[in-house]
Image (cartoon, rainbow, N blue to C red; front, top):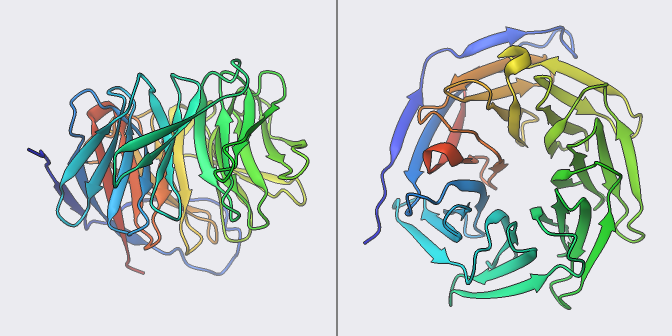
Length: 338
């Protein structure tokens, strides 16, 4: 029998706001309220790593990395179901395709997997090079090609679902590719977490271009806004960073919790706001940054978080989060107040 528990915490008080020098003077800061809803993973050892949204708009998927499962939450009813994978895959990241199949990185098995939720059948796509041992984060481009990072193996790759062909490109030395997003022109952008650089890869030639960040920066996760500005969480130094790929200009904003904030999962919403979590404080925080005024709001995560390694923005604007350390996943609904 499915077990679930929903925790709803309405943040109806004024959030802590920290103001920096405005990027656009004369504009007031937009304030929002948030509402957290959490669900327990079905298996106590699941340790959800990454979340994703289903194409129906009502389901939240997660990787049960510790239990070698994929989980599905019906956000209307709270029902949770987990799908066993056919081996010790250690699923890390996941994403839905246009047909509702769930693609995931088999971080412990050197493969990409595809789950058909209708049948439970899993199809495996092995890495063509055994050095690509730990696929990390997947994302689809507008042409239906699956791009992914390989952290320890130090590759960026792509998989053509029509043919099953996997193509790998070695990343720069010590790069450790981590998060990955797609620009509006179809170009993948990824963190080089082992360095102070961010990279892009040409979809046709697989040529990598590097962009240098301040010395000591370690970009861990990445987001891109509607203007193709790249935002990243500097895990090592406690900054939110902004990179303009056209000009190579970098701006940094100290995270509210300071140098020990360890900002991690990050996403952008349609209003231009940047959302991320500080993992270096307990409880973890959810932080909103308004680029128009350079102001922050932040909330303590009611469940504690236990490290929010990744978050995504659903089509309806909700944020979906995985709380790995407390074995939960969650949804954040956003309401504008000013």
